[in-house]
Length: 217
Image (cartoon, rainbow, N blue to C red; front, side):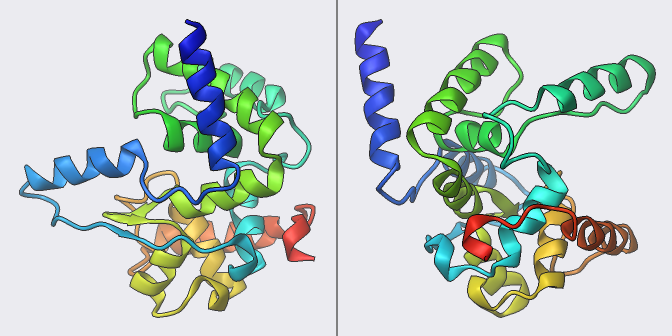
């Protein structure tokens, strides 16, 4: 057990400084693609520093995924309570994972809903909040998150779907990318549906009320 804690803490400390080039999800998706008739084998991932991304990108994902990102310590208990109340009454289920939780899952864990995986997610969430800080969490999140079939991170998405670099993305581009994040393999920022365009418009409105991320000032 001591070796486990030591190794995980060392890994988190290392990723505080070292770019995350590969995640478990990327490997899993590659295997799935290899044995699938539905998806082509594809792996596009370009690590870029947060300073080399559009200033609107972190604001857009906060508006879409985690409006209280700068205020909570990894867990948004208000959102959790609202999700619990909603899920008791509605057929559609709402989640309440923060950007920090999603980053912990993306970088260190695997997809799934088991109690073991959820417990590990909470553990890594606490570690990266303490050892990384908000700016690094956002940088890793925007570089590692799935943004399409075989597309990971803002720069790969910008190049594949917009013909731009991450730095060149407009406010509307960033809102459209953020609109796809609930299911980036179903929803496309390259060929957006009417539903995606509605989500984009809503996110752009909500971006006005998000505290500016430190890197976007």
